[in-house]
Image (tube, rainbow, N blue to C red; front, top):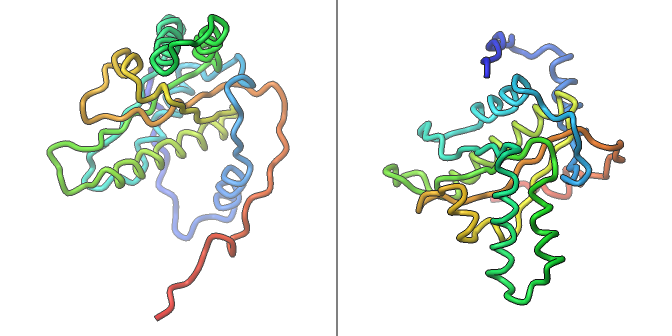
Amino acid sequence: MASPAEPATLAFPRPPEIVELAQALIHTRQTLLPKRLFDPGPNESQTRQILSAAAHAPDHHELTPWRFIVVPAAARAALGEAFAAALRGRDAQATDEQLAQAREKALRAPLVLLAVVRVRDQDAEIEPHERIVSAGCAIQNMLLMAHALGFGASLTSGKALGSRPLRALFRLGEDERALCFVNVGTPDRAKPIRPRPAVEEFVSYLTV
């Protein structure tokens, strides 16, 4: 995939139109479930733009403690079998219908990626929680870039993420953790913007 040109450095203070664009993207981004995401998905160049956005997340000690694994069409059936095997591991009485539903989840959304975080390595100074925060910032960058490109996106998780079948399929290391799947595609319809909490609801001031 060809690398997009690096953007020019923005002047300080930022032009008002840049502030307005950032605010619009942040305030209008929504979660759109995989079952509502269809073709066309991002093309090769757009996928690289989305992935490149992750590289600009905060990253103490520049460890890049996260990575993303794209699940191409040819690997969707294997992912479906991992979902089904994970379900059987949790519930030996799972019905054929339930197993089929588990497999079907792998077929949703044109672009599917697994977000993986490395919770520890040779740099013991950076704690697992800090690495997870960095991964979360990388994911949010990707969601905003997908939104800017006109796509819908969502994060999905579930009990299968920690299962042996899924860890084996993605060849996760002992110190790696599967965080979530990132799903990207074209929404089937617009979704109303939901109310968000006011700043006063989640901000307080330290008093001494």
